[in-house]
Length: 262
Image (cartoon, rainbow, N blue to C red; front, side):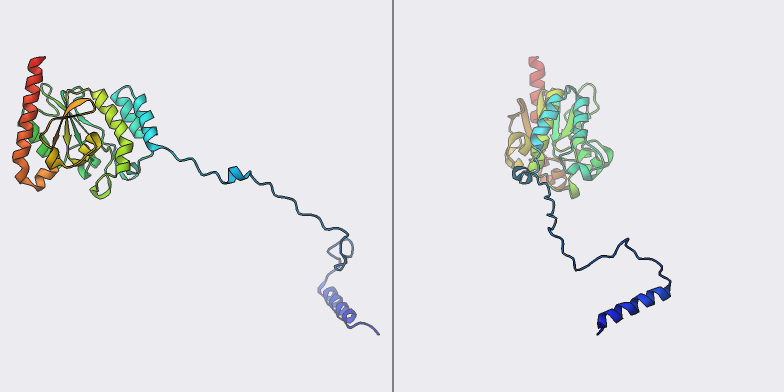
């Protein structure tokens, strides 16, 4: 008795012939029920050693990189280039310009502000907005100025890039930019520092509390230093302008005394 499967397969073959099939796909018939004598073993995939697989990506020491780059700078131009090439501070990604300095290098007085604002970020110079205009008036009151050849000042910031929405600098941001700041001070070689604002005090003195620190001479980066209110704070709190004027007079007296001694 013929198998039902045989008739079914024969009908499928006749149907394919009617469709125009003239040859088989394979050169020889394939027995789908034939089991090979030995199955081929899968090839082992090469694996890296366990120590390599568990190795975490090397973490960059941003502060050490900053120290290395700052130390290698022998001039202010080289320092600016080193800061421009520094890629470990995220503030750089959102800033328009590096705000390096203004005024005359070699001036007896170097002012260290906190961080650029919107106007400074656009122009690439520190203290050019309303706070900068007030600072210029304050300096002019004691016969100093960023463009005065006879009595110049030199100005920079702790942070060379603007924090988003003018937020306060983060401790890790200050830490990675501090080596550049210290090298900046060393290359500018002023006689005295004026530390402007709370975050500048944090960077150079390791403490904040400007209402307590202002007006008292201290030492920072190996130089005589005078903490003062930030002009932006004075714009918001005009009642402290009397204290700011007293600090300016203290700075003026210090400069006259050291000039006379020289």
